[in-house]
Length: 241
Length: 188
Image (cartoon, rainbow over all chains, first blue to last red; front, side):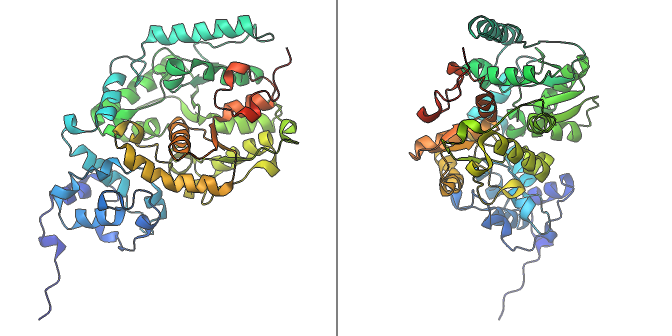
């Protein structure tokens, strides 16, 4: 005798419910199980998982497996799966929710540490750089270029210039580990006569709190950054990428 | 960029500014002739370049138009004949494996395994350099080359723009290979 078909609605699945509540595209019935997501995902095969399998496990209520597999940290949330999906099932958001199901202190230490560092100063730097340190490095590097590179005596790297058109952000890696990498960009901005500024608050481009899926911290950092740009009355928040 | 863009939306944060990418500005400044780049320095050298489309910038934010801007800038700077695209590309590009906190996650072996897709994409272009206009991409693609002993270099876009303009100082050439360490040095 043939086995009866599984009725998904009869299966327990707290995580599935959460997905339905929180996601605008959380209707998992839309998934055609075609596997297009997995076919084009570099994380397919890691930890014996792939995006399609992950969605099926959510659907079948395998909460324990879904919320404990380290695979959710091996997905880079790049959104290629949702881009390729004929039904636009938002798998990366599900991965995000699964990350969130991990007790905060058990999430990967490196990401956790980077998020916590960013909460220490209004610079939002994941490397913990303070406002004073950033200002010092920028001024120090600028002075060196002005002195040692003929033709660049008037190079500028404005900080907290109110009303500038562009508020430039910078990945912490540069001021902290390779400050000379900031210089080519300054030179380009100088040549085109761009009206730009750094802000001592909110200059750091990175945001690991989002990856950590600590929403409160993520929101805090975005608010600090947005306020920094608005306080300087800049028209554009400019990314170096 | 994505964290701010998505965060402003998700948490309903009021703000008076717009989000802009320097890639779009580079393209505009070159079109307006404010940024007078050229590829003469690479005419005889014929050094080949490919480019990584950062997921956060292209697929997750501004889409294919910014990928076109990126190619416009790169071709102006290195010469059209010296640009080799990887496949797939633009919004359909593969993530390098540097995003999502991967570099900080501690799952290094998985990250290298994941990155093999990108590595093979780059190797298939036979390019000498991969331009990575995103920090996470830069770190990951640089690390992939070292880990798998591939011999391509990884560079920031601003390095090449400044090289083309003849304003790239000696100590700003950290990521260039020996072939470009002394090319188009500032004339002083």
